[in-house]
Image 1: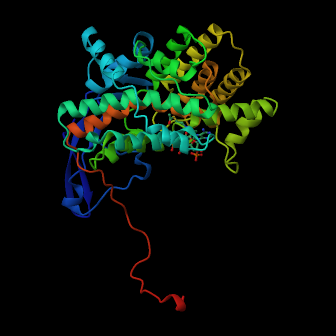
Image 2: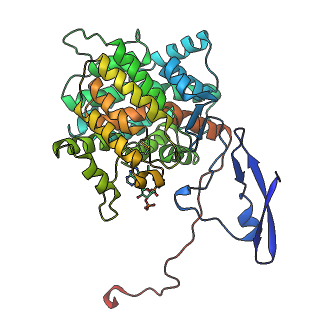
Image 3: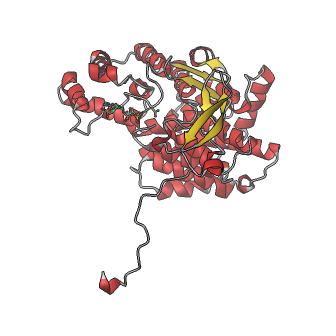
Length: 428
Ligand code: ACO
């Protein structure tokens, strides 16, 4: 294949280099196009725009392939743990036993959050959405750990900020949950691994010993692994672009949390359960709701269906669907909404509207049913997604810094008013 593409504008031809990734993806490099021709490209929603070259996650939306650092998601979900996957994403390779032990030890040294942070928790109304709290609290960490503000951190300082971010996030998420109940917070117990510690802080009680079920630990590990990274999605691109102005790790991750909150992104997991509950209350007529989703005059969309990149199937959804059956069976839970979800999927997968538009269940379609079975309330689902996505955000933020990427700053085509004369207010 040619190493460049030709773009003809008027009587001029521009040679644009072709870049090929290690998995065969091809891109036309337009980074010099404006300088050479005066033209920019226009791609609203970035459907065709590569914002970076990244060595972290590969996905093939046509074939339904997802790999972290070259390892298939199916293998990682089956064999690995969340903290091992976090190491893999952030540092590039699977850890040796020593590296993993050291990493876990480091994380366990920083699980406490500054006691003054509790005042922030106190300030939120008890029913305020956990994602708003999480975004604010994560950004607030920068006030307590100001060494993160240095934009030219040494390798050791950068690593410490990364470890602190990972450690404190689990504590903050569990404390948000405790606050919603009006319960006292549980402090981290460094004898536990990351996920058990998180679950203990979440479901443990000061008043009695609570044993965290290994089935729940295993399910949580699987869910967090499946959410850990997904290349340049909305929240990750946000983290990278905020970090590109040399904002600190807490501010960058906080921005990612805000981006994840929306129902078209991570907020879909909450929206799916709310939709399934609504369908249940409405009598469970899935055909009626499928028709609503197809009706262009009806704003209703089948939440948990469709994906910007996956146009065949979402490999994470396949794993989650199976995990959902297994976990509900192991926990002895019979959830009627699971049956509704399966019926919706079955009908949609045969319906020409969904088939033609290549709309399949995404990672969020079944995840909420598992979270619910594990004991989480609906409005915590997106926070759990954030906890899972954290290693990906960190890895992408670190890669952006190491690549010394320039500040992210898209162009636009201005189409507003031209040359208007100011009119005094009394004359308008
Ligand atoms: N229900 C009904 N119709 C849909 C759905 C859906 N869930 N998703 C897409 N469509 C239709 C659109 O109406 C459009 O139809 P048209 O061509 O007749 O106009 C067509 O399919 C293409 O949809 P777009 O919105 O253009 O696709 P895009 O790639 O921009 O959006 C998105 C992807 C946002 C995920 C979309 O499919 C959606 O809104 N899904 C529901 C929300 C959801 O589950 N989000 C989670 C995504 S996964 C994640 O972020 C973790």
